[in-house]
View: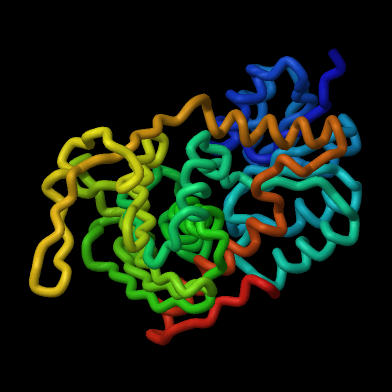
Length: 352
């Protein structure tokens, strides 16, 4: 079997996530790894028996990769992508693909012109239950959606600095924001966001919002609310999920756990019978009937290998989130940041 010669740029936590996938792929050979911190690059290189570099250009010259995974901090994008495109190397770029629209839109335009195969790290698009949610959206007009993502503060030093990470909405909750776009087949057109910085204390240099709530209007007419926070100290503090609501049914998505579709089946769901809707002066009580779908396989592995297969075949049609589409989700979440900063509603133009 001919193996694809792959290079890795960025040997931090997200690089580790991808490297663990590559080590399981029989059709991939990691031929070089690069990080500005030499010790990290050398540790990765030792695991896959390849050379380590601190300069990605020297790596490109030395190993001539057929594809590259770029897993660098959000504020570091730009130079690497421009050089990679100039060398016509297919690239997988971790999310968010950047923080400066002028920069990532220029990269997007260069990718278009070059006809380069690209992908991004929005791996939830590869969850086995995404077709279930898309079918729900096709069968029911979604009129509202709501998401909650609450967690703690990652131990990555740059994450706590908004100018370097973009904050939680841009760096983490972008997964769920992207899922709303993907499932609904709709684009956000306007957002209004509030951000708070009153919960997390005592962390030097911490300046990201520890809580935020955003209201979103989509071009389909649907409205959505996105609640996110990085204040969690225990697993009981919130129920992380994404809900798509129609007039007669709803679908609840729990990341990496399940999808529950209410109104289409007759299987009891714990707690569902207690749900109620007030209609006029009366009550409609749910039967709790739901169809539960469990995920199959590793969506991250599926995401990574889909890119590899596209490089091998020259056919990118199975890639669910190419660079160009990932740009739209960054524009979406950056608009929320702008609204927090200005205190005004902000138009979102994903068609830029």
